[in-house]
Length: 377
Ligand SMILES: NC(=O)c1ccc[n+]([C@@H]2O[C@H](COP(=O)([O-])OP(=O)(O)OC[C@H]3O[C@@H](n4cnc5c(N)ncnc54)[C@H](OP(=O)(O)O)[C@@H]3O)[C@@H](O)[C@H]2O)c1
Image 1 (cartoon, helix red, strand yellow):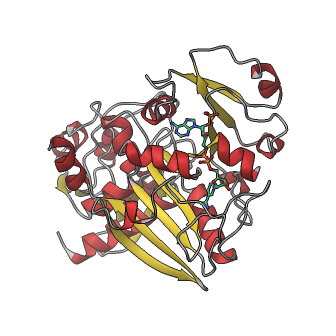
Image 2 (cartoon, helix red, strand yellow):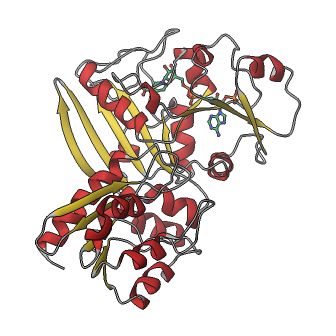
């Protein structure tokens, strides 16, 4: 592995990051075709909707110049043909690059190493593992979709200087300034779905769309956990029907509100309840995965946030902390527990800390080995 391999893979990963939230049910992948001189001949990222794949786009752009070049790909090329054609491993073999540099093997059993074998059988020198950790973070939604039949979960919350969440008053109460909020909207754009509980819909009456200039088309599917379908049909969620609303409810009972909510454009998604009569968040995630969702941003209130933490289903957490306190009627972010449930638990490591004017954002990632060790104990 050379420094230039890392530089080129870093660029390919940047392309992959740009497609997050757009390519589900497929992973967002990036690819570069680079001449022996070091000139970048072509770039490609997975197209919206998941096809064509990144390497097919990059090779199409490179044309004959791909022969003898190096192709960089953030995920092993698929060995299975999709509905519309040829497997990417075969497209690469036919283009005859001299080398393929791949960040990560694809755990999808239809590929799982056979994409690489196919390249090697075609005489292409394959290098694996370049920036594998970064690639794993970008592809986490796909990896968990394949290995655990669930999407990756990012928990997002906003608290005041006192660590408490402001209480909604029929509309969201903003505890942070416009820059931090814009960053939060970028998070929405990079996820396939955004999930809240019914309590947040009642308290905040939010739209849950991405409202960055020019990016409204990047709004993810909006999902509400609503056991008995008591979301009011007049909620603002239903005002923008360009962005789907899925209401996850109990499959164990009839819901008299079904017709009224469907008339407002909601899609009703029944899920079995657990022994305590609650909607299991694991079941809800599996249902979302079965519908192709690979990345979920959980923006719910304390009850939903707590349920995801208790089920050990939070992969990343993004905490915005404003400069002013939420005040006397502020809510503990996890019902009866404070931020230290994430920040001092030892289950999460801090990846990033950033200021947005007077506000502060910290980004946390679950330490897998730690939680695996705990669950094995
Ligand atoms: N600052 C922030 O970042 C932020 C973000 C969001 C909300 N909030 C605030 O949080 C408050 C609302 O809190 P909340 O806790 O009621 O909201 P929530 O967590 O979004 O919703 C809770 C409701 O979700 C439903 N639910 C369904 N399945 C669930 C499960 N497995 N676990 C937990 N809940 C499940 C339950 O209603 P059913 O039994 O009817 O299904 C439950 O009452 C508001 O004041 C809002 O402004 C703050």
